[in-house]
Length: 213
Image (cartoon, rainbow, N blue to C red; front, side):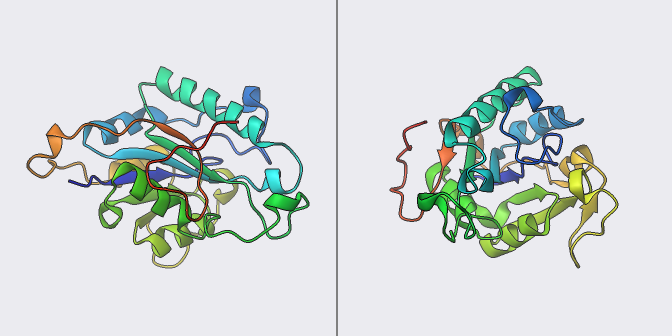
């Protein structure tokens, strides 16, 4: 049986907003991340989906992205939170690094990262949510058939949400808005899929994990 997920934007949603973050030591969790553990206990997969255009712009490489995500996992684990997957898109149509300088379905507001997570982890997108602080997060959620929850943190501080989208002052408030009722019969016996870290690309075989940088 497929399980729902809570997809999470990274910068400004989970961690402090740092332009083109690529130094792991500059990664700082935002308040309230420990509440994500309640979602996992309720049966939701926790999946980070993030655009990393700095790779396409030549500001840092994929190894730097991997290092930041290792620290993210460690800090969240210290708060009692285990991520099921961390997926990112390194592409940008105006990039300066050849292989990455292109449009990509995975880049939010495209739905590619969410769709890839659904295939690899057996997720129910219709029953899932995405928490983010950018209109691109909302666009990705809508395109994938996921419910968007907008947080006014990071660069969204003081800004209104996109029309028709529920807004919350911080991550903890958004987490509280996710239904945490009883899981359907039998779902409690399902075993969580192995954690996945990596980026997705169109046509990647289901269940195959990309070699880590």
